Length: 602
Image (spheres, rainbow, N blue to C red):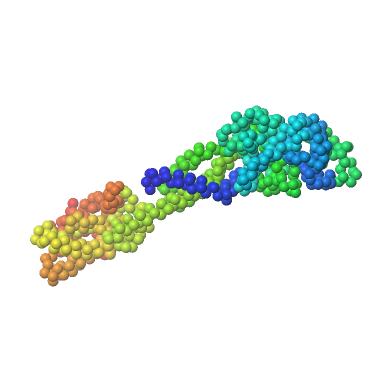
């Protein structure tokens, strides 16, 4: 694959991943993977600054009433919480409509005004999805008129309905309406201020009472949850309003007056108190990263406030920086996978999967960064599969080249074996023990001068075809033709234990085939010729010794030179069979062939 294609592949993978993660199921997989980081870290120690006043089963039993509770109950709650020393009181209960009892509404508003530390709940209803206008639900007029601050309680869930981000504010008619968590921390009506100057982009912060809250995607903060449901201390709503002035129908005439013991214990002194429903019937529970039992909305607000007070924020990595790093990583991995064998690539892939998760956990636990987990894993998988495909295509190309290069000069079984290990043909040479055979036509120059080019080519073609067939049938390879000379190798590119014997067999069979051809040519009235053969055995440098552009599988060295010399001196000694082998070849075949000592040749 060209260099430009190598750069293009990671870009293509990143584009595909961006498209894939538009599908909700992949988003959900990413969320679940990131949720596992919370499980792996486990619940954390929380401060003692926050207490939940729970509207629970006990409260309904003790008060023996239905929802919504009378608002004078809430007024009593504010009075008792103030008496117990609560620093801040936040209602995760909406009082956006007047009740049937105006006096009860006034009691609630007046109690809040007297306490001067109560934050109420409102909501922005977005109707754009249904073509309806947005609607702002504010606390009732008596509460607003008395100057009590309020904030919105909008919960923005992810595609799997879990709450992982906290809505810092909602926008409507060019106004920003802040959440009860933000309003509580500032203890002022931020929606009337000019704090919008602090809100710009994903990299901006919302500054609240000396706290710089990192903003995620325009108006959210990632919640760094401290634990599953019930991580914060709970006190039953009924217990707080149970004093000497409050009758508890559900207690059947028994006076517990639980509030006084709560007050005297100091458990509410200087605490941020959040009031909200914790029972399933009021449908104010949501899934969170910790899974298991759904978490009441009031506890989600508590997690946010605890996080801000501790400065324990979670940050999302800059998406452009992350994409750049991912591109560089994919590019490096692409080149690495292309170099590795497929078997090693699988092991490397599994190790990278584990390292990716460990990196995500390290950044989450130690650096407070939340990075994608599934997306890079899929990217790794894609780059691995792409490398496998390229390995396969390269293998097909390599095998096709080998088959085309050798099938005419090598036995089919040798070609098949070579295809199983193409690396034997990689560029460069290695020292191997082989046998080499040279064959040459005697006085062929004179022969060609006495015959027409067509006659010369035809008889040469017939001769070379017959000789090559003999070589291939005996597991040799044709190295090259040099004019009318033949050079054949035995014992390479695949090992051949009896390469010297095979070379000798080929020499004898070539002589037999030559005799047949001579008889045939004489019968056809053609002039024949003689050949000389030389065989040598020894070490030679063997391999692809051509250029990087031109393949040339051959052998070089003294062993080859001596083989050529033995062939050429046949005419000097006028050997009967016109075959000369070296003493090195003889040492390998002396028990199997008959020879005659000829001379010492250098």
